[in-house]
Length: 81
Picture (spheres, rainbow, N blue to C red):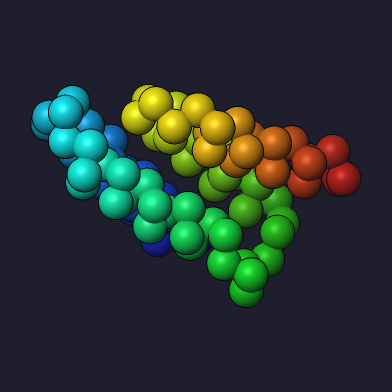
């Protein structure tokens, strides 16, 4: 999970440095999403928290569908508790 946060932080850094650096931003976000989609990751409260926090980086980069998906994952976990 910490890897996903690191990748979203990288994407934010790339975006702030150069708003047109789609290649590096997307690569970092793709890596974050890969970490979050890993079947071995436990879908618990911490996972929900990370999804919720990472969603904003996807939204900032214009990847609204991914952001909505991550927010929905978090909501789903929170509603089960």
